[in-house]
Length: 404
Image (tube, rainbow, N blue to C red; front, side, top):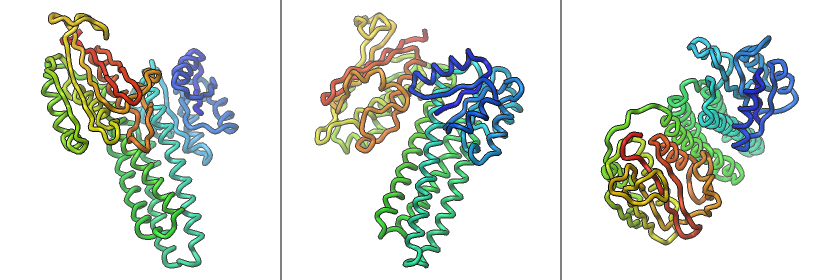
């Protein structure tokens, strides 16, 4: 549950609509005093707080929350229309805020950050619960394995320390992309190392404890992958000047990166000549990496993947446009013979964090196609897909040849 705190009701209505479009439940109040009262009655996973409010501003509310053991871990996302100076942003972090967004709010950025902090909050709760369960297992083994208990307690203390470091780093997300790429990955790596040491050296004869440890390691690995994908997604917000780009060269580099996987799966890849367009090479490379990577990943068992990449010049920016040698757009199709999907889910596949497949069978974070869509849109293009479950998929992209 999310709590919105804003003294302007129109802002609350707009924020609630953005959140409800993504099936996110929320409450709303119009003052800091009301916020402190309702937080005592209900549990919230995230607070979206306006800075400028009469009587009690957002900073004062955050300071009050940070002073309570019950509410100090609730992430606070500040919103402000005027206080964009560094000193105000710094104060936001000092009072316990996890991030700062200025108005008018970018809906995509807001949802990205809200879902990230909700996942981080839930991840912290999961790690805390598993840590508590491990402590109980250690107590059960205390009488029979006194010497082992001492070593496990020492390792557990180290794990608790690293968890506390992770919680502190979560409050330092003022530089979103760089914090994500470094300050979070390093503690996760260390947590995984210590958990594996505990598993390999002290818990081999306890299946239940091993299960808890393995779940912790899997959660850490998923979080690491999510951080990497979120970093790629956040980088798409930066402005880069497009240049003349040969898509054949881009595709050649991508296929070279997938050499090992193509060989492992005995994949057949057929490529037609692609055009030269005005674009951002690094982003177009990421686009093809995500689409071809999906075709290789979501292939059928015991059937080599077959991927066809074709292109044609078309007259209009339309998926059904006729082919025209003098057209100003290109239509690129990436077709495969993989597991496919039911087209009734087409509206969901390009939404961030959406995944239609079993995460145990197919690894992924549900961000790849969202990244692809954002890249195509930044190039003033269109993307869609055609698919049939069990037969395969075709992703169709329309890109302008020159800047529009």
